[in-house]
Picture 1 (tube, rainbow, N blue to C red):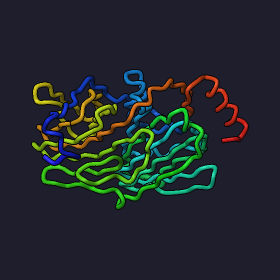
Picture 2 (cartoon, rainbow, N blue to C red; picture 1 turned 45 degrees about the vertical axis):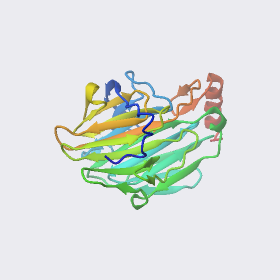
Picture 3 (cartoon, rainbow, N blue to C red; picture 1 turned 30 degrees about the vertical axis):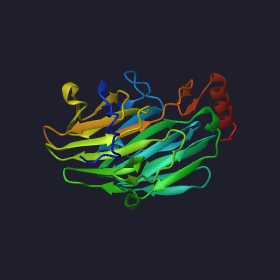
Length: 291
């Protein structure tokens, strides 16, 4: 099957297996937006460098219309990926934009930003994900920046049996548009047809997960596969190759990997630093209007 790169015949690829499966927990955030929290819950507080993964999915406007009014961030990156619906964002530096279906915003909060994310329509399906990616100590106070990526700028690889949207990293000879060199992320949106298989090369030392958001994917080596059902996240072992299949019906999942930072994490709400002293300073800066 097509893969990101061909393994060296002299060194067989190590296939990643499922170390554990975590089910997302119903939660709410912002001004009451209902969501499924997958990373950032008691079951999985983080997966270095990933701090949070939320899925928001509802066709009931009351579940999401209040949105995420102005709130601060410091010390990490937020990644918003829309499948359906529209989200308008703005910040205290005058930046504005609109995320539509299929679009991605990779925001580096760095030293600090205050922004809002508000659904624009009053009814209809709102479906997407937000992922938080940690920054290393040397970059936590970098200047904020946005990478707003329109759907047509995200390359797709579509051999028989599956389709992959390449948001970050490389697959099938194409590279995603996101640039985040400190964690060198891989972010793939994979759709598998029923009965079909898929494999992708991954940096061996990256931490990685599979999150199934439609159907169920079977993940791992033939002798030790595990089913990952809708709303479940599979934490993967280290290795250079990921194999998955859709044995019972069509499946869609996110495959995400990143270079671990291996640094201490101090977090308080929307601030993620390395020490409690840095958290206290972030609070002072926010309360003083210096973000």
